[in-house]
Length: 342
Image 1 (cartoon, rainbow, N blue to C red):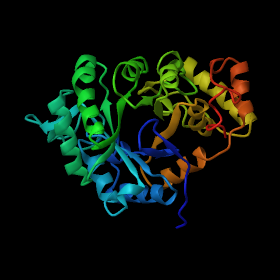
Image 2: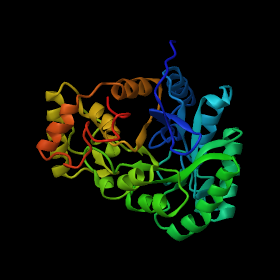
Image 3: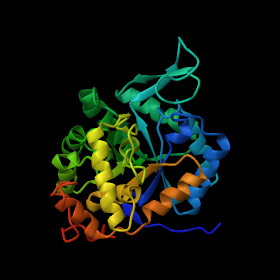
């Protein structure tokens, strides 16, 4: 297999570099359905072969299964050649009342359960457990995972604990990952966070991050990793259909109609809705990486093909003119776009 190289972007003010495309390892933790071990291994090998060197996981994903599989697949790779991120905030503890199967979307036994904990001790215990499960010697990035209901403890205990580890050189970069953008802006403005992982709030259907976290990142010179670019599925098909998911729920008819209208404009510009959905976050200069879930080698190949398509700038202009995306989405002649333009 021919090995490729990809573009890299550095997380601002840190030593950590990320490839332009990242490997999201939630699905190899049996998200929604079983991913056979050989498929998970093959996905990581295929990602490596096409130059992907950023891998994101979390204890939450399959109650540790994602971390174990990712660590096993990377164990023989040169450690300085790739970056791994994991997350803290959900400790895995013995489940005193197992029912047989996890109840949070992963098809795994529920012999463990998640326990919210953003205390300093919880952060240290979580990182230690992640290193044990992955077999890695260090984590390049650690995010606070979904601290929506835990701002005070996350900001006052967890983030300072991560900052201490970063300042000691134990971790390369620290941040938070969430499905909302407003609190991510607070983490950038009010804590020691270097970056944020923004899920689903800067997409072809939702540009609400332009109201808070993206201006904060730009003003402070901090970095953003974009995930959830398909909004749970509605943007993943060339022709969106009724019954597809949007933010984990059945998509409302009005959103399906809007997605179809965007798909029509994409087709007129010689591309597809999924390719445009992946390219769209790169319109913002603070977004340095797009990370996509990859379940098997075929999905890796498909994601890479979509990601690497050239998208004409006129597409975004046309979508703005038709009112299908916000008028304040950055344009190609926007200062700061030079390193991001296709």
